[in-house]
Image (cartoon, rainbow, N blue to C red; front, side):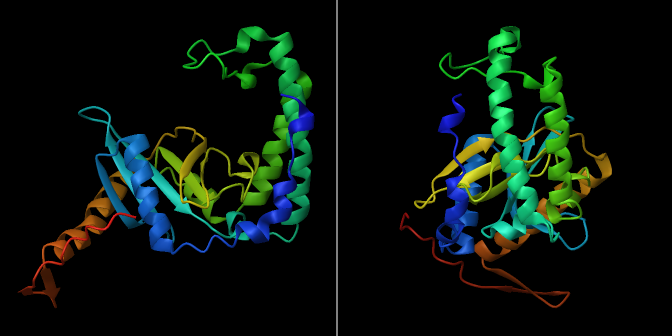
Length: 261
């Protein structure tokens, strides 16, 4: 890729990006649809407790891989750039350094593609968009740059919500959903995937999440919490109201909305 084509001018338009005044529930709705379409979730729930501090994830999906294995996916939604990172005082300075390193990274990757063609993936679906296993490169400058970039990202996210979730071993895949170009893929917390939505609320997968090993007990608790969170919707949609500990009232189920938007 020609580094002259790379531009981070969009970082100057953050105020404009932050004007995506979509209601939170509307973004959450589209996130559910995207998760179902792209990841074929077998179970879904919103506002699911993660068992980490008091965190609730906007959308959690579960997918049955085999009789004994279940894959869990978390989606976090941020519309404020500052909230994508921790509250460190040097966040702006760190982001400027990251932008600089990203440009250098792209230039080195162009050299790697030329000098180490064997790193091209053999499983590419589209010949016009080849992928490379840059992490296997023998280029010492690239390894040093990636190490420095990861350190900056760690500092940027240290102690923040995304890092706390990432270190909890509660989910196999974790995605951050933000307005288009609110943050760079290389600014995103380690191992997190990134999803953009545009002015029309169309979703696009920008970076895939790195699959994580999970703690069996924590994932089991997450599965229970997904079921518990979904229970509220089941009760509501069927007109069942729980009053106190032992009283059940039956109401007229809410009418299904037919309008598509």
